[in-house]
Image (cartoon, rainbow, N blue to C red; front, side, top):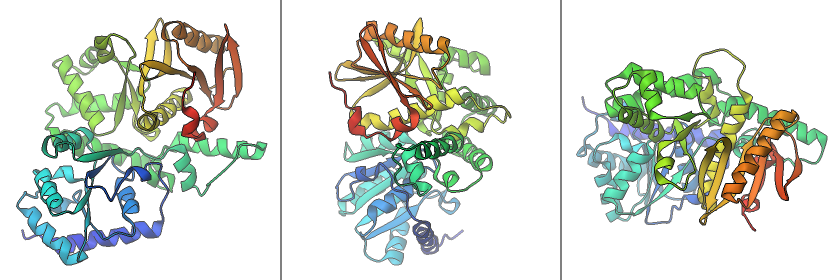
Length: 427
């Protein structure tokens, strides 16, 4: 079959005009994409998180062309076909000095194509839904000549922008109430741009889950035990925020070895369906052995198909995790959880010291809950000597003093919207 590359590129160019008509939601990561750099700009993240939109927004006002390889007509491209594709790009766009290669990891030998474009002084923006595949290929073939941007679905701040709420100081009772209402929507719907702007969550997220599991993982890695893998993926979406072990997963799903379970988890991470949080320990082996699993977006919590009251505590914890994960590169810290008799949800570690311990709790109004959360922080503090301690709640704010130490209690809406600068740790 003869492929009309000119037609494909022209049709994809039309799709760009549709995106522009829909308008843009400002993203926190926009400033990280340097379209003047000679380094390949890699934007990686889960499907439908807005990677290509971010690339287009960053390239506005420049001479750039665009090709999306996540197109069934381009599924069987060979390296030799890329020359024909390049000809078609020039035929449709005319002169250009920047190029967006969307979901390029679908093409074998793509790195050779990128290398050739770089030699011709074309600046490249690459997007892809497989973090390790992209970075591994780039590290191997471009010897460090790339910059990586990780794009998650909307943060709460971005979600508010999508609802046309550009600023809302939490001074009045009215504003606090309105803001909390938006947060409840965010906790339920998650941060995928198209869901935030009106797509039905259940149908959308089910279709997206299937695309990630089937196309990005089962097909790409040629998984033989398809049912076991699919069952494990669904089970994990229902057990987010919990500690896992490879041995337990092996036994639950009848896998051949711990190593198979480890590989399956890594595939789910690479495709950005889940993120694994390591356990904090000064012993390297213990850090590698234990993990807690979080969803890349709370919308995936509905995948299990079980109709029940959502676990608001775990949803809140997942949202706090995602925000901490977003902030970690800008603030240069590592993120862990702590578990030793007691458990602390998050440990922020940087500059060879524990910067902050964070607990997440819906409310501290129940005396038992309050005592448990404070005790966990104080026990961990004796061993880890953090600079700060915080408890993120749904809507409570106060300052607790315990044995000469201060614990900040802060509403999640305020915590999510506070400036990154405020999160710098000082003694």
